[in-house]
Length: 494
Ligand code: AMP
Ligand code: ZN
Image 1 (cartoon, rainbow, N blue to C red):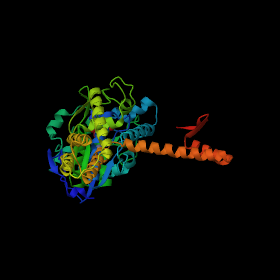
Image 2: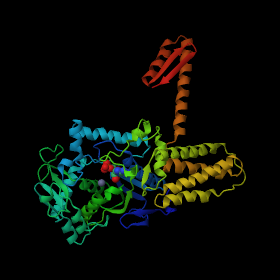
Image 3: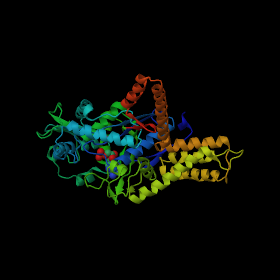
Image 4: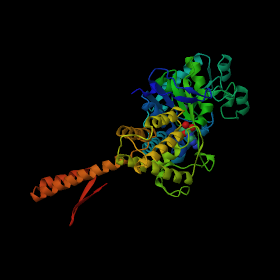
């Protein structure tokens, strides 16, 4: 269903600083690129928040009936913490620390990342390209930029020429609203600065020092790609020279996304992205959650408990619910109190939903379900305002409780609409995992095993030992162990 035809979605575009009507480049299709994690260590809860913001955006666009191609990369080639300083390459540091091959580090933390996303019920992207898998595309882009006069080679490295870009009438700094002079004043004296024509220039390709283990052949000698170039190479390859949405955390606005705009405009003559979206930060104790400062919590520490910051473990659904109670462009400070409050709110929401099948329909409705439903859509249409949506969902819960107390009435048709709308917004759009379904599946599994135990008992009564042993052995292979006792046969599922 092409719901988007009846809903007017507005998106805040960082580039214009305004909420704009969402109009896709190709009718019915959305190309969305989100900068993925740098897999040199565990993703922390802050990273999870940003990816969750874009999970909601993806989910809502899908619900509206758009054909979404969602690309989220894995940064697995040298990500410089400071542009140009090879000793700051996060992979090199971690490789030394853990005594692992670089690709072992990459694999270890990519697996962890996927595990976390599964736990939090994220929809997977349609394409998850890696930087190391796109070295050729990056080299080709750098060659084109050199050929067109936007980049130059210096001592085996390639730099983007920011002043040349501006001389050609393009405007470096348009996203972050910085000007070149300001950038000049803020550029620190880093390794590689003396190779650059101007301090604002950024690396497209870096020559590898002997100590640098991740290295590839290039026309300029052995080296490795710059971080900004990888996203331009991969987004162009899978979404084209201009696509609808590009997202990431606020901290990526500058220099990463600014550089992507410059690379895109210089190489393809068009601004690469229609809507730039930036998710705000998760803070803890009022400070940005970050690996480098040590102010972070790992997702598993929150889900499994056993850390000093939270009094207990919290289910991933509660974490999701807590995050979504803040708008994606607002800062969210995580705390024990916030989690406890979210747990209470979440329980109230789920209890209300559970009451729905027990409500008796009447001949008239005392609430306008269609108006309530549109309020839910309007909240999401207003730049994905999940806190307002949740407030409307609680309005729905209030109504369900009144119905339950027979203080309000509803027709069968409206009841069905209420039930469907709740399920769509809570499970499909907010991405809360449906525990009821899991419980149902467990119940079904237990039912099937009990049935097989009955069949095995019959087989034993008929002295059909072959069949009874087969049932026991096949179940064991599936991790279900039958235990014969004096009160009959029980089982455990591993
Ligand atoms: P990284 O792996 O450092 O490239 O980060 C992956 C994503 O997480 C990026 O989009 C960052 O902007 C985002 N991010 C990093 N720290 C935080 C934070 N404290 N809160 C929200 N997002 C963050
Ligand atoms: Zn990126």
